[in-house]
Every structure is written in C-alpha cells, then in structure tokens.
Image 1: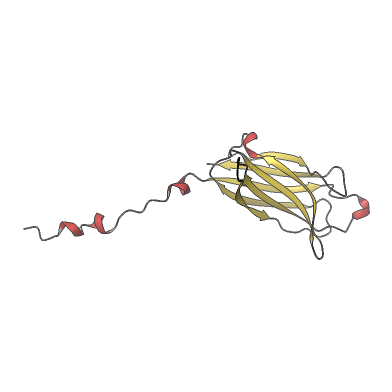
Image 2: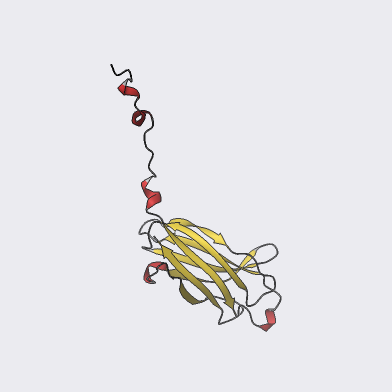
Length: 156
C-alpha cells in the first residue's frame, strides 16, 4: 500500500534547471587601462579632457559581431592621463576578436577623436597573467608619438 502517487515524485515536479550552455563557456577579457603619454604638444596644453572608449568586436567574414563598448573616466586638461581602471568583457573566444581603442576628447558640443589603435587579441597569446601592451595611438592630430599603456588578460 504505497499511497504516494508516482506522478508527483519530487524529481518530476521540479525539473533541474542547469545553466544554459553559453554561460559556462564564456571567458572574461580584462583590459586594464593604465595611462596615456604625450597626448598633445605644448601648444594644446589645457585643451583636452581625454577619455578612452573600448569597442570589442569579432571580425567575421560576413558580419562583425559586437561585444559591447566601455568608456573610461575623463581626465581634465591632462596630456599624460593616468587612469588605472579595469574593464571586463564576457566573450566566448579570442578568435578574430579585435579591440578598438579610441582616445576621445570631451569637447564642448561634440566628442573629438584624438586617435585610435586596434589590437588583434588572438595574436597576443593571452592568459590569466596580465600582459603589458604598449600601443602607438595613430592619427593623433596633436602629437606624433602618443602611446597608450594597457594590461590585458583572459581567463576562460
């Protein structure tokens, strides 16, 4: 005389809900924005309030997949801004991933791009140990030799 109806056993009424697959396979890309040097020459001192915009996308044959953008704080009147800020992106892979780093100037009325560089992440051999990256900021209108200093790590 088992009076429990087997249709109502616990495992039937509470199906286990595992995480969707894609959550388990996401890695975390950490970009540490250290500093920028020589953003402008002396003629432009006091004219720029620089901030950095990171855009992450996967370069695919037909359509690029966007993994979001992040923006640093703004540094007032600073030609050699020090940020010391971390940014985290959740990504499934490093394959074909490209990080675009734009140095922007918070100008009245519109934001002006001071320069940018692109970093192909899969070529770096990233690991959980942060890798120091020093990149020249191209197309900088004010200074020929601005550099941005980053530390990038990736943990699966």
